[in-house]
Image (cartoon, rainbow, N blue to C red; front, side, top):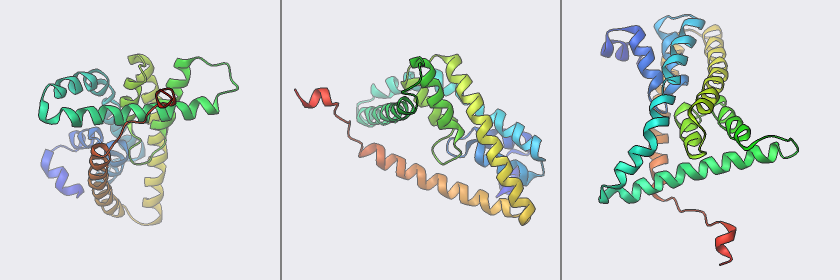
Length: 214
């Protein structure tokens, strides 16, 4: 797979940057791909970190305008509403978990929101990358600089973890194992995309307790 993507762009650097920018693949896939190209630990980390972190800008500034634009198209307005509701509830759930862990601390609302996004992005699991993290920040009404700060730090932590795991795989086995891992990541990305679409389509808005009593 590494060779196929390499042939597509005819440029290793652009290939690594582009792949790390793609949703669902992002930093995790970018690091594995870059190591497979022959970049060393720091080069692979740097390229993938840069490519994935850049996603903060378009997601932050274009997410809500795009959702508003999509809502003007009647056949897919319902789907856009469901996407908005899905991301909003993820943001609320993430915020509530951070509030509980910080309930004894005298911290501001914006601090908790920023920490929430940072922790979310820092955990290198599927669906916890910079794209979803920035989307959550948008629906938490964080400003751009707080969003960028959370994304930059969180993505750095996630990148270090993935880089160390990739290095461990190379040490224990061989660099060719990264190609199989990359195939697995692409397969997982497809499954997650289908799962997310199904989840969004079947999503129902949670009714707040205040509304239940009415």
